[in-house]
Length: 379
Ligand SMILES: [Zn+2]
Image (cartoon, rainbow, N blue to C red; front, side, top):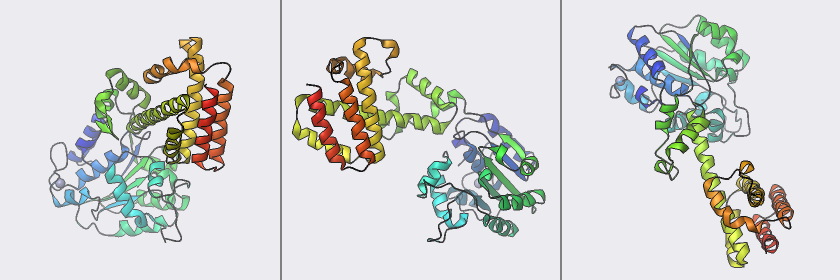
């Protein structure tokens, strides 16, 4: 991560670069702000700049031995502390046991949140934390001499997830830091970091990303969706929803894509049912079965919503209709088939299918059965 790779945040970057030039290197910084604004990216770029042996005016050089090691986050004077899940079977109990996964994950994309990290290490249903045992590790690492750099840098992601015993040890280290040691604490909830750590650290609040910077950062091609497909209004809508968070912007794009997928499936089902095309009903049941349980459930919720919207569509009340242009295009032709005689029946069948997914009934059967019932209902 270089400063040039960070989305927006010009003022924060300028301040960090200037402080290094001025030789003002606080031994602890508390970098705080909402998720998705670039706190980790900033910490990494700053650490790299500090460690670079051939600093340029506005960024690290990218070619010195230190920069080369930073490319893989494997510099011996760069240490990480982050929430993990204890795994007794695999003997994973401190951050270094997850270091390989951590480096891979952070290098992939330094804009992430706790749940995506836990997901990455297969612990999505657990609460990550920084355990008491980590304090021995922190002490051990900081008592080492700096190997190659002037500074030893320790990046602590989410100090608010730290066990109290560990927080207290960390506080001692921050109060009496070994020479040339820099702590970069990155927090989404600085109020939950113990007060004495807060007061001993130089505070660096990171604001939301400016709308114009976020608009240009939307990835040109994300999971097959072409940036050019988004018109200016859609981009500004997306930026508005993202509220200064790059993560949130990606999330909005992804939900949009899922929606598209669900609409396509909904259209196919309704066409097959209307044509009483049993062969295609069967093959669509395979598509449905392959989606996975959570997606099956959210598709069925989406379908119920579509039925409700199509019923309302007929009543011609645009102010209570929430269809995107593509959905509305389909509803123009489809809505006459949803009426007072079948709307309750259709909703009931979709809700029943959702409950069946919930209780692990064979998805092919659920879907095929559902298609047959819809075929009768929309006759
Ligand atoms: Zn360099």
